[in-house]
Length: 80
Image (cartoon, rainbow, N blue to C red; front, side, top):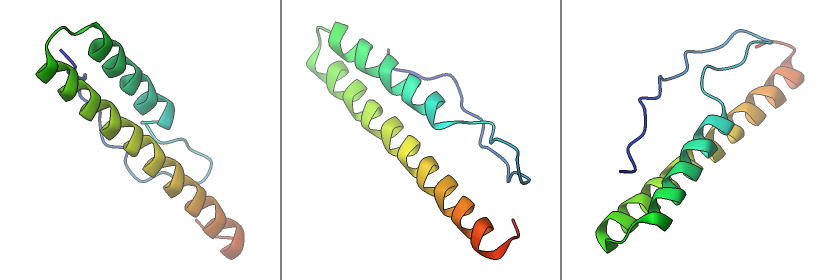
């Protein structure tokens, strides 16, 4: 069942520290959901897993946008 292990929300990070949850973690979960969708014989289960995959990929993209914006802001202002 395309059920993920709980993902802890990353607290605000200090300069040079990585968040607890990386986009690669989200992408790995998306891949697990895709595998489960491909293996499913039930349409409703397959659709649920595909929706979950899309949500995990969106979270990865959002995390990447936030990290990029943070890095640009820190470069521009010299402050975190």
